[in-house]
Length: 491
Image (cartoon, rainbow, N blue to C red; front, side, top):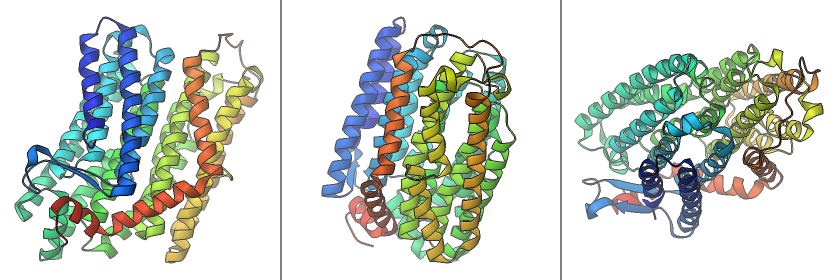
């Protein structure tokens, strides 16, 4: 089961290529693969909860000599959310992707991107993590440029250059780490690095990985490529990227800075905490200055990543549980907001807030479907964002980290200001021109509705997800559990 989420999407990508001339068959294959991915991942999560970390040694080569796939509670949860988001974006794409882009290979690339994301969440070795990042980069670069519009090509160029720099740094750090330890298996690295002296060597490598993953996660000060590129492709692509791509980078940071690079916590994790604060502030201030709704939401991707770093930097079980909870919340909320932006553009004909208006009167249901995830993103109760931020703030107060707590609360108020700006301009003010009367497309409305209901549900019934997140955080912090599962021995 560990390898099935990767295989099912890879097979779907291949089948979509064979069905290249039939958009209908590509859609059916993609719906079946993403739905199957979700079902398999959900079952895998159930297995991991009851039987512990699931490990596959490919080809029966024992760790650390072969390729290891390992799924613990956090990676299983990320696989579930990948399948869930992938399925509903696939549904949205039926009404949201034009015939031209579908004919250029949207569906094979969509499945290939899910393959890379699933592989990154499942791998147990750093070199294969690099490989899966490159699979994602290849698919995402073509998806951004798909259609060949001038703005897309400009955004794609910035996107690929910065991500290639991150890949070079990642590969360089991985080569140096192998030279130092003779292994790239994460569990084996956790054992061997504990005996490396001087510790400054390990800390230097940790910073290299922080920069590489930081660029891919769009943290401060490496974030500028994201708002320059994410607003250029169709909103279906942007929603997929906002929900999953940067979160893979954050997942990688959480993985290596809880398992591998824990020799100099006072330095590395304090640095992560400071970067989290700067990421929050720069992202939300950038959002406040925008008038193009997709660029505004893109800056908020950056801002919310700061909260994920906050939990990792605090490095307590409750804080990391908050990051895991927040990850689920923000993936859902940001995906919804981009999908709502796409629906709003179909009615108003523009993504420019100055040219939008009147949507509340014309489409009150769409206004509600925007308001709920927007208020959740700002952290208002009883929505999921409130509980995600409450956990992180409580962990910050327990650790005595008052500056980051004050920053997190202030950024929440500024987030509410940005969401109010969208509401006032796009929904509340009178329409500057006659709005388009289009029949409701169920392929666009149903995904937004289901995802919004999910945000409401995990807010109203937050305790089960919090308990799971707390359990997953405990598993991350006790590295001996992971090492025992992969290596078959306790360090």
